[in-house]
Image (cartoon, rainbow, N blue to C red; front, side):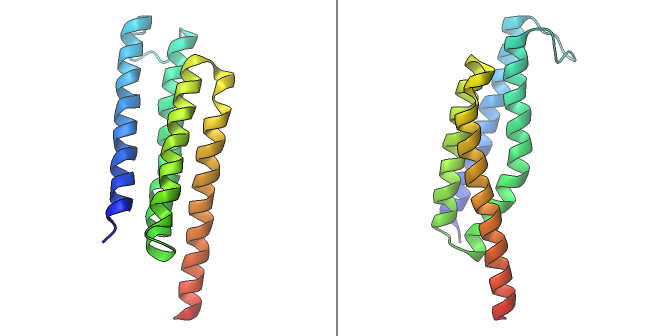
Length: 130
């Protein structure tokens, strides 16, 4: 069982839900009706947070579980928690100004890469040892 990894997964999904709700709120605030995706730079930044977070989740979630299984059920969620914090910093910064997104992007990208590369090493070692 991997309760900590499950918790980080649930927190990631909750974060994405909040980010998605923010898009709906931004549509109303900036009067950008569906299906429009452009028109107001403030709205576009909110949408970019959602799109980029979804793109990153596709890599992060499998890497989180693979790392937790093949490397460490404690280190995986620990690094995963750093990813979640990075995404929050990314969103908060990007909502304010595009140039304020980079610290959060760097935190989440680096932690995601550690999970992905670490899981690859763990899988390869598991194959070699079997």
